[in-house]
Image (cartoon, rainbow, N blue to C red):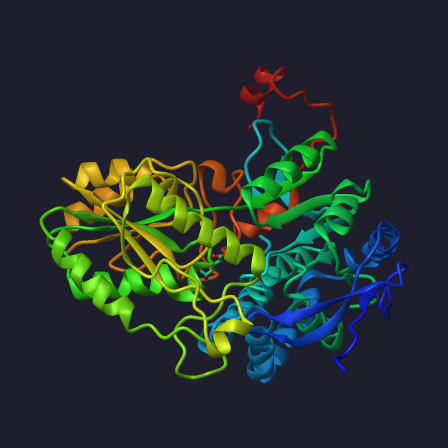
Amino acid sequence: MAEVYKNLIDGQWVESSSGEVYENRNPANWDEVIGIFQKSTREDVEAAVEAAQRAYRKWRLLPAPKRAEIIFKAAQMLVERKEDFARDETREMGKILPETRGDVQEAIDMSFFIAGEGRRLYGFTTPSELPLKFQMSIRIPMGVAAIITPWNFPMAIPSWKIIPALVAGNTVVFKPATDTPLSAYNFVKVLVEAGVPAGVVNLVTGSGAVVGESLITHPYVKVISFTGSSEVGKHIGSKGASLFKKVSLEMGGKNAQIVMDDANLELAVDGATWGGFGTTGQRCTATSRVIVHKKVYKKFLDMYVERVKKLRVGNGLDPNTDVGPLINESQLNKVLSYIEIGKSEGAKLLIGGHRLTGGEYDRGWFVAPTIFADVDPNMRIAQEEIFGPVVSVIPADSLEHAIEIANNSKYGLSSSIYTNDIKKAFIAIRDIYTGITYVNAPTIGAEVHLPFGGVNQTGNGHREGGHTVIDIFTEWKSVYIDFSGRLQRAQIDTDEIVKVE
Ligand code: UN1
């Protein structure tokens, strides 16, 4: 019998008021039940938000370096449990072990990095226009943060949000993706064992429609941080705006890798293979368009197909596997339907293009790595996020043309250029409109201490990662301290200034 996992509310592991549960199954082998999780209700969310609101009163007053010490301890515990957590993650999410180790590592990196922020959380001072007056701007925490996360980075992405929220002095109600609740449980359990007090972090599993919706609309929730589809993000953004909540959204991508005629083609193929098919293409940073200079187009395609042919698809726990399954049946159907769309649009299918069947494949959601060539930049497969192992290759006449194609997107998360010409690299950095640009590296692989996020419909102006994430979870308060002993009027008593020695 699979283990039953509970919600965490006010420091207690509790069942949902619904009395209902759901099964979490392995996408590489759906006979395997990973665990049984709570199908939570509005009442559960209310209890969690109220607990977080109560806990906030004390947590915000604990000095930030002390809050950070707890996070530092959690980071050390994550290091100790990395291997077990990676295995759990591969079983529930499907991506290969080296990648799930990387996912846990990203949570470790974020925790150590933001634990350091506990002794910074910098504000600033600035001179006054009036004499004998001091002024500064400081950061203040906000209250209860609602954290809603996707299944593709089930420990890293929650850490990007929960850790800075806590160090900044907020309390948290966390709703993880229904497909990956075990990694959420593992992460939260570490926080509790590291010493995060009761009510400061609450975990409520269940659907977006019930749990997510009641969370984002709750009056006590001050800030919402969401990563997921642009469709859901649009809903959360507009709902949050109508309720005057701060909302940070991190959504889709249609990331392009440009390959110039002077590029190291071996390296460019490495990049397009890892960027396109790592995580089975299920990253918001995944390379889903490769824009290749016409002079090397044919050669690049030959080399790319040869390389992708060698990718071994299978269970992510098998050390021989390069590419795991898709997360669930609906993603499988979505990817297969985009492959049909590509064919009917007239793109040239070079490799893959079908579901894998036979043997272990029949028990999971496996699709062959797929490359379309001769893709027109306006085709749907070049415009819409597929979130699977499907790459569209597009020819370009020049650097300017390649950049124009790269920018022809409603998204704008990541991008990359392969070139050995420093001028071309800097022009690409200047002119590609995305939140991230790589030079001679794939579109995936952001590190936690740089701002992470995108332009256009990828985001709404916030940046996770880096010190910039602190802006999401704090408000600025400007403080003016007049020590002149008299009334001084800003903008009015301008002559007074002249009189002062
Ligand atoms: C995502 O794609 O949803 O930069 C997050 C990367 C990872 C994070 C990806 N560090 O590819």
